[in-house]
Structures are given as C-alpha cells and as structure tokens.
Image 1 (tube, one colour):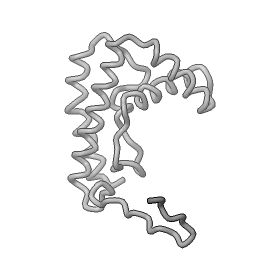
Image 2: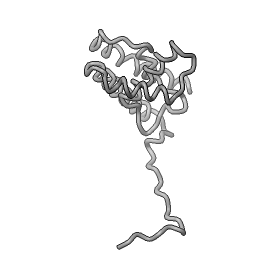
Image 3: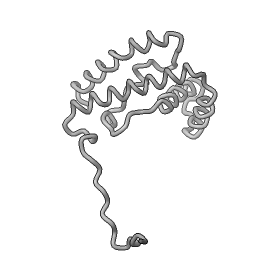
Image 4: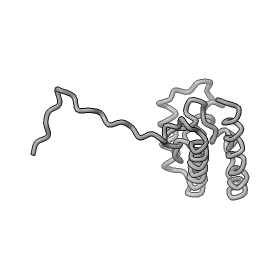
Length: 136
C-alpha cells in the first residue's frame, strides 16, 4: 500500500475513532478500534465495506486468539454467530456505528483512487452457446 493511501486511511480512521469512543465509553474491545477499521492492502478499496457482524466477528476472533493460538474459522463463525444473537442492543449499536465509519472511510479512499473497482461497473456475462433459452 502506498504511503499516501496509508496516511489518508489513518487520518480518516482517527477522525472517527474519537467520536465513537466518546459515544460508547463503556464498551471495551480486545482489538483497538483503529485495528477493527483498518483494512488489508489488497482490499483497501472494494465494492463493499465490512458490515456490523463482520466487524464483531473480527473482534470475536481476536478474543479467541488470546485463548487459542490459531482458532479454526468455522469455530470463530459459530461462536460469533451465537454471541451476536445474545448481544445487548448497545453493543450491536456500537458495531453498527463502526460499520458506518468503515463505509465512510471506504468512500473517502475510493474518491482518492483512480483505479478503484467501485468506479467500474461489473461486466455482464455473455450467454454461453449451451445456455437453455428462457421459456416464454
């Protein structure tokens, strides 16, 4: 990831983190909020940002990593799903706020990048020769 994009992303994250911490001072996370919002270099600009559950799953994975060195992904998904269903509304609202921030950051980065996949519409597949014609 280029230094310019990395700097832009860190600036965007820091702008929002302070307001989230002020709004939800009682909610503690295993990972710092900055790390929850930070995206990998290969997916810095994608068509969609992480939703609330995916951010929650990332947090659950970090919690499991403190107990187990390398938890299986199916176990992480199962535990995250069960916990999410029982989670209090305030904590879910916290992760929904994080998801909105992640989307704002994604849009900001997409506006910055010229080669962003968001700027191009996906190509429709041409029908294959073996395709069955639609019934009329």
